[in-house]
Length: 139
Image (cartoon, rainbow, N blue to C red):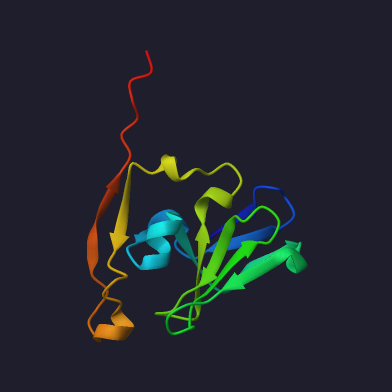
């Protein structure tokens, strides 16, 4: 388990996240919301996201079944984390909000098939592909 401090863009929301598998759990998703949001996330167990400041600035969004709850700062609009639909004991944390971490730190990010969600199909979660970041030669 690894502990990371994080915040939204404007700093109104500050939190601490305990990632159960560190960054071994990073992923993106193809569902309609995640596809538009474009965040790389890592997993924290229930209780693994502790809001240190700005709880009143957080707002949430639910769609489709309403099971997943996506949190974002009401001031700057940055998505910080969400409670997952497939396992409500897990929270996905936006790695870009973690101090010193960038989604571009990961050369490959697994992309999960959220369009055909396991809770809808009854099938195991399927990997839809891999997102790759190849830095340009900066000579």
